[in-house]
Length: 178
Image 1 (spheres, rainbow, N blue to C red):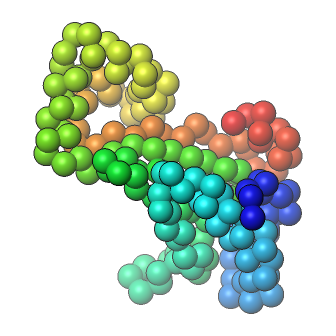
Image 2 (cartoon, one colour):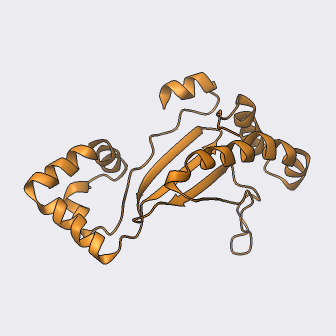
């Protein structure tokens, strides 16, 4: 089946889970999760198969090592890795759909080429232009950080997502903010 999007009811499901993250809520609403969240996420990842294959994360938190986590995640995430090592991430929550891409752990030869491209005058400027928005957001989230200057020290690169729309806003307002 083709991906047609996530419904307002799916956002409502995650808002309700955020308000009542309990085993009883989950038991009463597990079918809603499967229909409203999981099925559309499977459709989305099937549509993005050129960037995958994708793995969907489980909905429950692992409680073995941290007892102060809520039992269920308030987002459905999926991760896929394409040939060459580029990672692709999609997440749906009450805040809407968030996607990202990057290299988490480059191979040594990729890392060498990446650092040379940053250092080279022509490609460094081109790379800076391509990731200007990501650099601006990274710098804003880390006072005193110059992402281009620190880039040669990095072994990974990704684009941070934009800030989510405030909770309680309508799906139309969230779409306009994203």
